[in-house]
Image (cartoon, rainbow, N blue to C red; front, top):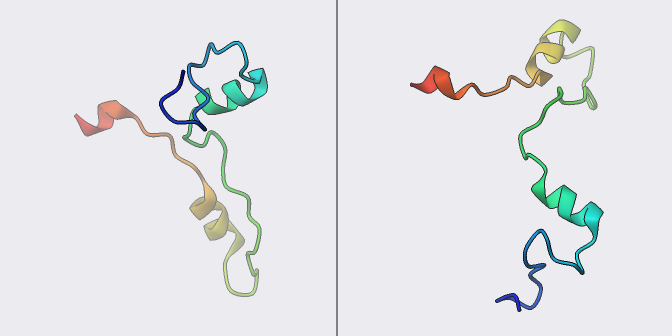
Length: 64
């Protein structure tokens, strides 16, 4: 029995919804660029806005 009543337990729990279990195991780091919503072209250059929205993956070797 899970310690917390709302806890789903192990990922291999027979009662767990497979889609919910997969979502909980999903990597939290974004793999694609942020959307360019809410950008006012009169205030921001499109190229600059695109560059700011770009997601750069973290390489752990860069920190060693």
